[in-house]
Amino acid sequence: MQIAKGFAPTDRPVIAALYWEAFGHKLGRALGPPDRALRFIETVLSPDHAVCAWDDDGRLLGVAGFKTHEGALVGGGFAEMARVYGRAGALWRILLLALLSRDTENVRFLMDGLFVAPQARGRGVGTRLLDAIAAEARARGYQEVRLDVVDGNARARALYERLGYRAVARHSTGLLRYVFRFRAATTMVLRVG
Image 1 (cartoon, rainbow, N blue to C red):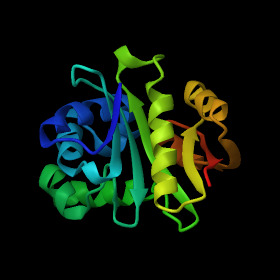
Image 2: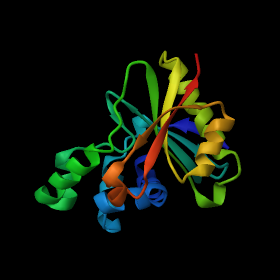
Image 3: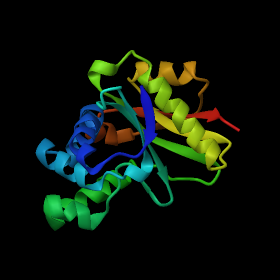
């Protein structure tokens, strides 16, 4: 397995599909229908905010995204969204997604999404990607990595805890649980410095 920052333009469709598989249930009402969501995600993916795992044959195994003041793995703004959804569709989607947005902070490096191809799960890909995120945080001078895990994703939370992440806060989605299909998210932190 090889871990590397970034990806080639030809990798966009497979990364978008894996992202949608991992997060489509949560984001479906905001970014759907799936064909438009995939088109949008594919166009706004940032290789500068990705760490990828590849097998020895060059097949993508998984991706860990991160968010900085310069952008995120899945970024984009109104203009990019309007090209896919139209101006009216983009407006309400931007407003809805803003409710989920996680602020970057100067104190902690923000890991913003981890997803592994189904055939690669249980093979240590997530662990290797999280190790790479910790190394990226250290290289950028951060002392801690921060991530959020939604309730109901016990497998991911168990992985984070096994690697030393600790829960520091829990945030309820309130009535938005009917839109995003989860009731709460837990913020977890790993000391890397």
